Image (tube, rainbow, N blue to C red; front, side, top):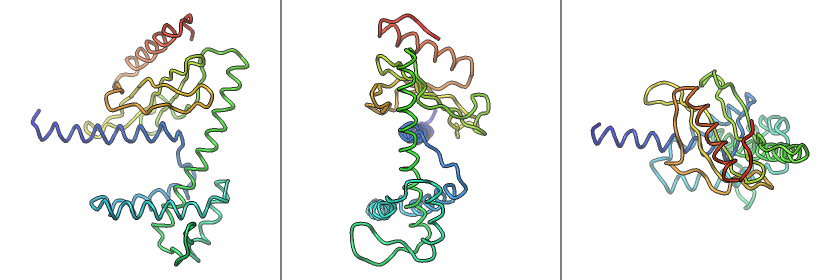
Length: 239
């Protein structure tokens, strides 16, 4: 492999890992048509500033400020209902006096950010409920998050986060698109999670992930990780 190709592959791996990190940190996905539109506008806003770090930081700060002005909205349906009004009259910054923002890309980025915050709150509530139920039933493992279909590739991307209840060691698995080869790949890693909240204590690093193109290889790796974690915790292997 040439030096140029090596650098290209390295960049691809970094970007893919960044996507994975965002997925496991948020554990949320846009589901409504409005959410998808806001995400598109957000992408358009930031794409034009990627080559200008100062401009990118300015936009990020402004979007966060606008999203704060939406903090009184706690339901996704309420956020969707507020969209048309924001487009018509604009949105004022939260922390300062100034002109109202009317640019659709800025507004979309702010709504997209607030939607992720709302979904994260909902996800946290769901995780707390799962932890309580697992403890009540004296389970060894608890699934903190699961979505998609393992056999559907990127048509319904699979993801699963399962925590060993006693130790907090957690297996994170998901399907990601391999843009280098045009096929979906299964990635898996082991991380430490706060057993009280289900929040990760540290994000997996670049070298902490293992890729598999084969479903069987992935399942074998996942089971090996479960066995390793239970052995470290001094507990008998479970299913």
